[in-house]
Amino acid sequence: MLRLLALSSVLSATLACGDSRLPDPSQTPPLAPQTADSAYSVTGLREWAIVGNEVDAGNDTLELEVVAPSGTKFVDVWLDGGPGQRLTKAEGKFHISLDISALVPGEYQVLLAADGDDTAFVAHTFKRSHPLYVVVTTDWDDADTTDEALALQDDLHAEHPELLLTHFVGPYTFTDPSVSEERRTVLVDWLVGMRDDFEDEIGLHIHPYCNFVDEVGSILGIADIECNIDESTVYPTDSSGYTIQCSAYSEEDFTNILLASDAVFEERGLGKPTSFRAGGWTAELNTMRSLEAAGYVADTSANNWARMEEWQGPGRGTLYAWNREHWSSINDTSQPYYPSQDDILVTGEDTIGVLEVPDNGILVDYVETIEMIEIFEANWDGGLLTEPVNYSIGYHPSNFDAVYKLRITDALTHVDQFLASQDAGPVIYGRLSDMANVWKQD
Image 1 (tube, helix red, strand yellow):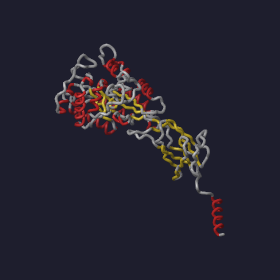
Image 2 (cartoon, helix red, strand yellow):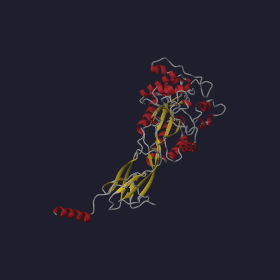
Image 3 (cartoon, rainbow, N blue to C red):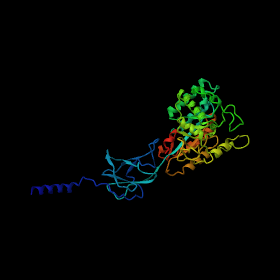
Image 4 (cartoon, rainbow, N blue to C red):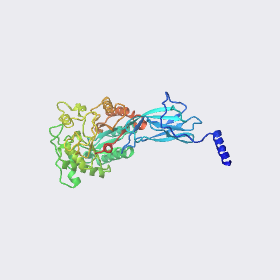
């Protein structure tokens, strides 16, 4: 009798006060509202959620916070038709770290509802996308560059805070007798500042100037390499070596040219370069094998040759024809690949271990702003990306003036509208060597 009275008392109290236990989140999503309920404030919903990789973490969670009307007991969230998940209430707000790491590229809907309502108070659709990498490079064709050009490049960083540059520096800066030791120190200090302050990359650019090739033997303590002056892409002969094809050197000789460059860079505090572009884009399979042997991971000599029509015509040498022949399939939308041992233009089962990143946007010498934007849009139509995409542009510091700076600034301003960091698109600025950790060799 006493037990029955006790149970009756508990039942009466439950009926009077209400059961404090909350129902589990519904397995079935609520209906989407016609419009979001303004009584609720939601933060953490993204327009773009980038798929991460070894270089960039991406967005594998949505950190949602909801401020709800007073008296709201609980808030649940549903991701793309899946079961509901309960937000945690703390300090009057509702929170959840919503795991989206398993989502493949596509469009996904998030629904949020309160207190078991069968209609959500907000519905939101976001894009899950791979990154669009924008790689901006500089080719040090000459041994020196002007203070004005250095300052204009400083301005690029100031105007585009997320910009990363890959500086393809020539080793001939340190062997050309016209460049004083004092001037070399200025250039090194500037490059180190770009690397340390802005996280730029210092890569390697080779025009096989004789003043450097003649020093390779002494730098490495081996027999001298004979400087080639006959296989120029511009002149019948070139006694300076500047316009000689990189591929004119044997695999062994060019490997030593690379190793000597590495030694000079290390001695000057520039570090071991791991990215490369051949002068005049004149790389062939022997060049690629040399790069692999010397520890390079990425090359960007594959050239969008059709955009350098300025090099066509009488008196312009064979540079255009050489690139048209050797990079025949490279165009505005060519993407990174590992070249086959037998064909530099295609990949295959047996590949060279150096990522080829096509210079699809080429350099400002050959493309104006409207062309750079045209190539950018050819690589990205505004939608989500089902795999990473690369877009490459650049310039020569030796002739980088106000006109060329304006060209690339306007192009970068267009690109900046779609930065992933601003939840405005898939764009991420990248360094060339990092691309080998995005496009991994099988």
